[in-house]
Image (tube, rainbow, N blue to C red; front, side):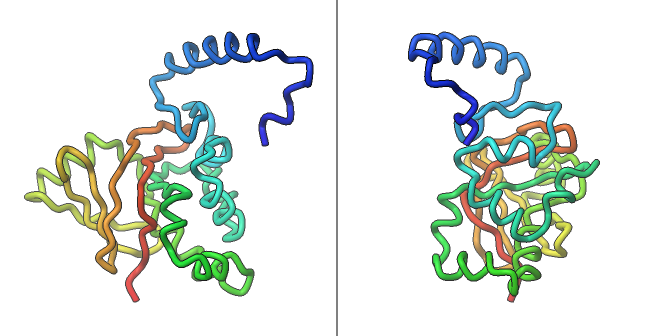
Length: 190
């Protein structure tokens, strides 16, 4: 989508050179790339997420649930952001049904189970896990209780249905919090 701003006269060489300069300037921010896109710490969660090719389903779901204004708000928020592959692992008829206007409440409930009302960097989460003897309970904005653990040096989150997500990219700093990319959609209890 963002490629629409490029004009037809741009050559492959100038793209490659511009991309290298962009990557170098982005590396100075200390933020990892997500979904092939730079994540800028001076932009909010929504402004960054819309640029990630790995989060198009999540962005569509946030829009369908009416949560854009919330996640553009002051925060701080920690968002555990499932990838497109994580959504694809769910039954596709279930995902399509959740996007329907009549299921907006359930979609909001699921999405807010991925949001914590705090700025929780991975080192802080790991510290809480250690302090709590290996498992730390994480209350979410949606009322879900997630259990955070360490597994081979990676943070995992287990939802109320026993599904476990692994943080695959941590500490993506935003102006209103932090994003941690996860590989599984977390669900509230039945």
